[in-house]
Image 1 (cartoon, rainbow, N blue to C red):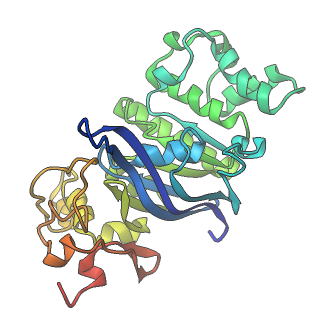
Image 2 (image 1 turned 180 degrees about the vertical axis):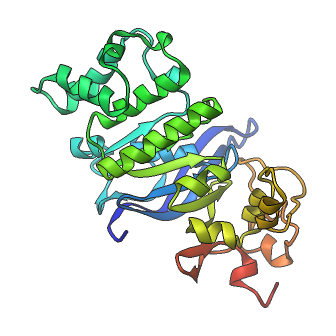
Length: 329
């Protein structure tokens, strides 16, 4: 994996959610994504993990073009995604697709499956035999051709999500953003959907930005894992090294809280890290390190200086004073 497909540099996305008082009327801002940088490579699965409200979905919606970044750079194969007033070329719209979390709300209930799959084909591949293409798409995702005449309410939750995956494939994309694609499905259906995604990745050389809060799922799916907390990336590592040697206290807390069913699995987990307090409001993020109010290892330095990302080798990077300032720790 050497060819870069998606590169974010100091990417920020802020939302103004209100005004303070009645005199000064200063803007109240949510820093949903606050200066993150990461790189994705051709054919890999990058798992973006974090609690609700950490900014994962905002990264997805900014990448797909639903949001325009406040500042920073976002490039697809070296080409800036947001330029010329935010109008991206049609080729980039085809190359990046998304599968949403809830298939029930992402499919138009008034259109049958044929019409749902036909729309992206009509926009991006005009002039071709769309009926043959629709049949092919359904065969690729293991659905019979007669499903094209069904409506979303006639399908199970898993089948709806599979249709959503087929719709994403309709434009022959290179990068698919998976925004918690299995969280709304039963466990047995989750396994079937994940196996389908892995097969499609190999068959079409797809790159996945897999957004989830399920770390145990990332162990078997992701090539690398990135952890987000309050709009910033805390740690990035290859999957094997990530689970064997987590460095950030927040990552250690997440891994130690994964439920297990055997003594052997419990022995593989890091020493339990207990957080204190509650998740701060994204409107009023603590000074310095945003995790310091919950971190059991917080130092005086943590309240004054926001740590920077440090490369510890073998593709493992972490943003923590325990690593960047070991003498102070």
